[in-house]
Amino acid sequence: MNPFDPKAAVLAKHAQHVVLVHFPIALFLTGVAFDLAARRMKIAGLAAAAYYNLLAAAVFVIPTVVTGIAAWQWQLAGQKLKGLLALHLALGCASALLIWLVAWIRFRQRGITSSSLPAYLLALELLTAMVVALTGHLGGFLSGVNVPA
Amino acid sequence: MTMAKWRWTHRIVGFALSTGMALAVLPAVDPRSAASFPAGEEKAEVKIDNFAFTPQTLTVRVGTEITWLNGDDIPHTVVSEDKTFRSRALDSDEKFTFLASKPGTYTYFCSIHPKMTGKLVVE
View (spheres, chains in turn green, purple):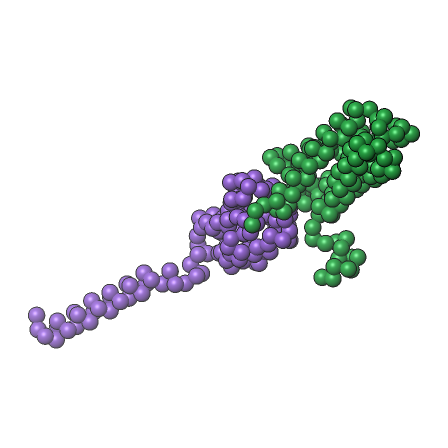
């Protein structure tokens, strides 16, 4: 199989969810890091970078959720989930909603400088980052990446 | 008893004993004898451990009941490529059983971890 063959990449015998999921995770965590740095250093450029990262994260959540649900329907025939799989699904849905909420709040307050952003937003961003990390940890465990050799 | 009579008796007893032993051993040697086993009487097990099916290739006779036991901490599935059998997601220590009623070679995999593959040969 040629890894640079588009057909091979799209029809690869693995769920695309495990590939796409890294984009919203990285974008969101980077956005939160930029927001924290912007607040501390009071640099407008960092706040703008945070804003665009959080927005991009919200966009990338869509294909991640779609491929996650597709994997559940196709690979597991849509069976009722339990245990780790059910927990991963629940946390994944919570992560998606929280990322969209943060992006929506951030979008509405895009004119406000980072230092004047409400304190609850930063708390919400940190809470979301924790839920995203936990979801990713479970996803890694399910995929076998986090399992010790 | 004369010497000649004793020899004949010895030969007859010897022939009867060897014929009896040969008949007793024959069913164990002839694989076709399994065809008379009732379905599900023979059992085989495949262990799922450390992201692998063990044994990777299992050869059984028609009518054998195969059980996959998930010994991993992570859910796995058992899905044949031709969709002859398909388990739900098996959590730790959960089992999936399939009765091999048709001869053939079935390649199967875990749909959560497609790198995990195995082969079931039903004779």
